Length: 325
Image 1 (cartoon, rainbow, N blue to C red):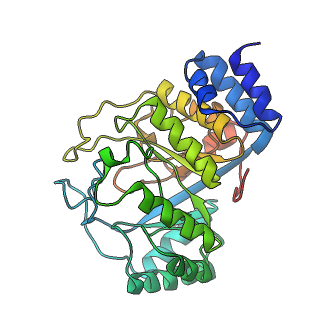
Image 2 (cartoon, helix red, strand yellow; image 1 turned 60 degrees about the vertical axis):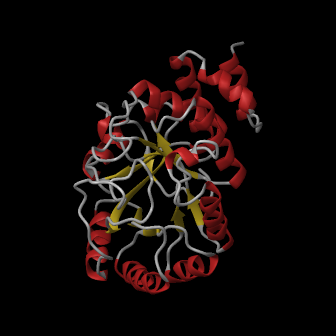
């Protein structure tokens, strides 16, 4: 029995793979690894496919120096800048997405964290969305505290997005204006407030295989069940603008290993998918079972219609996955 088959049987039997075992999967033949990961996905998640869209609710002039981000005030990029969007526009786009069959809609804002006044304004927008559209609301409002997260939950949001971005070891190479522990504190505050959490990272930041594995293992420790896997889109003007792009096979291997580590999570292709010629289809038969559709924050994605067609072609069914598949 190969190591892939051995570890597949371990995971299907309810076991957890170790860091050393994850390393062994990274060296396994790609075809065998991806096929096994898809079996694990089918066992734990059946044909459920969690699809969400995002709205850039506040853009640019971010105080943080994340080296990949076009919205950082530290770098010179062509990103549009504007303050918080009004409730009317947020509701309009929520209704549009709901009408297209999208089940989850995330309001994302630039900056380290929204102020109390901004949180209050966004809570009004969340309530208006819930009154107008049949869609779940997620938020990505930065490093909020538990009190602020509770207000967001009471307004009607059900999930908070806050990417770790990379491993604890590699994080200081990516950002120095806040820490990995700041991220973890915000995630734990959201969980304490009764919200589910969506957290993952960006691949292609110069991280090692160990960094990728360590991040997935830490997400497992936190109990996160929605894990975005972004592929860096090197944006001119940012420090990572010259980074080499990952390939389809790189991304397939990453999501396959993540499926073994996080067998019942929604593994979500997110930013950078527009760089993949197959629209991410190879990843969706290698362990991934969720997606961010439509436009990303500062780059274009694929249309909702084309993604719905792909989901149907692959035998998936759009469904909400909250605490697990």
